[in-house]
Length: 183
Image (tube, rainbow, N blue to C red; front, side, top):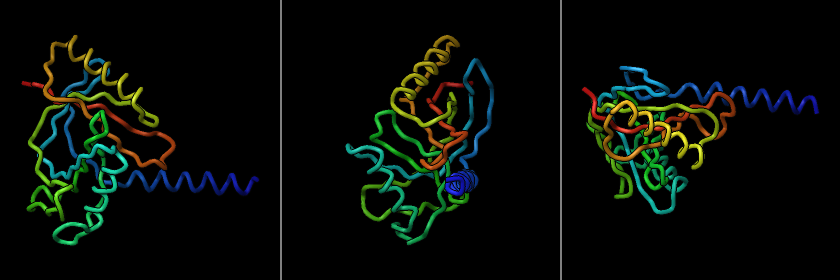
């Protein structure tokens, strides 16, 4: 039993260390207010897909794209975060920063779309643990209430951002984002 526990914790630790080696989407923190951050995100390269069947189906389609199911048959490194709509019908992967300077690699078929996002100002609230609908709704409401109290106007719908794979057990990072009007 002792050997099993040592093996299990060694495996969990190595998975956690490996999970922290992904490139992350760059941003600049402009302000911190209450529990939220106001951030600026420069243009980025992304791929997205939508499905009535939810996040597992969407993840598979996007993972196939970065695994080489694209017009260049190129494997593309996984990055963080993964963007998901609150209803889990839309998912987006951020591509490595080097693709912002290049032309986009097009997906094969019409289920995945590649695009450049515009520079944007967002408000973000961070939380840990495994994300689920209840915690996402709770943090979305906290974010929207804080923005309302600060008289900051929002644009569009909030997104859930997940930074860790399912095998990272400790120090998980999740965020709720919404675009804002910022001057």
